[in-house]
Length: 122
Image (cartoon, rainbow, N blue to C red; front, side):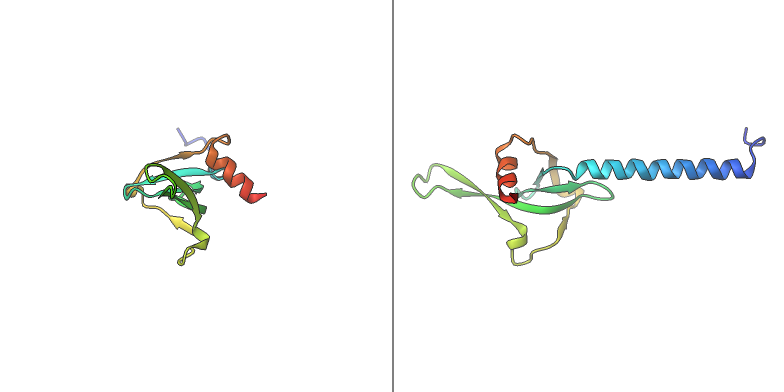
């Protein structure tokens, strides 16, 4: 099948395929980094941040979603977004282990968390 192809043509085909794969990975990674995503871990912690999935799960510009009791009505809960950058350990990003992630997904721009984060950036 490849007997009629010259070495030059084979090299050109391999280079074209590699370039297309690199472009595809770049587009995929760029799209995953557009908005905020939610990540729910097996520990019960919920993280919000800019998630990339290639080459592994990595969360940047992240927040922890914390549940606190309402001081006026202990039967109600309040939610807080605590920036990871304000934590004592303050990492630039968090690498997540796939087996510890129950689910993850992008937040809608109309969600309350997305709107809160958009207000913090302005």
